[in-house]
Image (cartoon, rainbow, N blue to C red; front, side):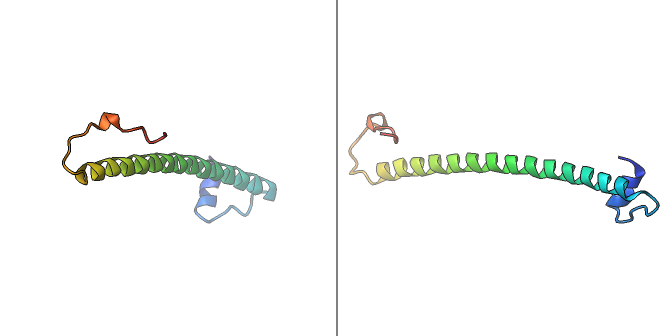
Length: 86
């Protein structure tokens, strides 16, 4: 960007520049900010999906551990359990 865009970002717009040029520059800045917000939103959604998946896995593992701990000390194979989607 030009030094004039630096002056816009610093809160000191050049008053001698035409209004159209200043508006165009502001639109340029806003479009880049929108792109940044969209990219951050995509990253946040991806992280939330991963967090949800890990939480489900943790709940399943906790359930298996609890069922083993609550068993009446009879040996059993976890391979005999049905997968969670059955």
